[in-house]
Image (tube, rainbow, N blue to C red; front, side, top):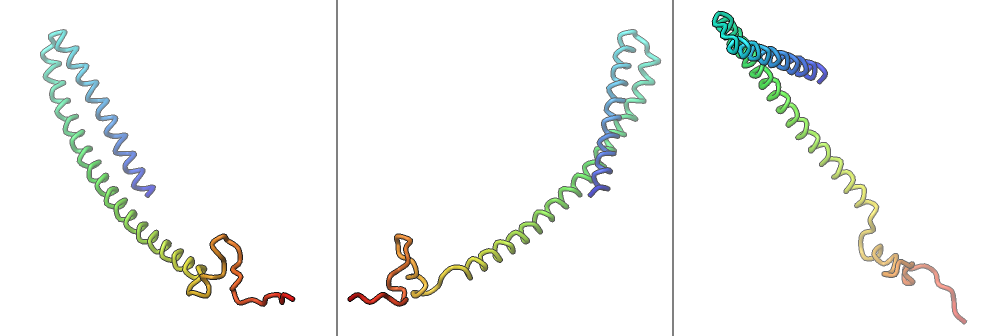
Length: 127
């Protein structure tokens, strides 16, 4: 994961630098156009094309890295869902063991939450 993150960080940093270079070239081209410097404009156009190609290559690389991370995240999410379902099932089984079952256990407490008088215990004799 750290390697993927460093790779992604490097790609983003490279792309950011390429965009900064591209903007700088566009500003230089604007200045050359205003100053009517034809020779400089032609040189800047070649550099712009090269920079645009670098941007395109970095974007494709970043897209491939991103798709790889998306696939990895999807698979991890699927596995986590399986693990979560197993944990829920274990919890439900544990709760089922703790719940009373059958008619005898159902009468241990009355509706009011008090012990049921007919639970089968010994009663006191009334004289």
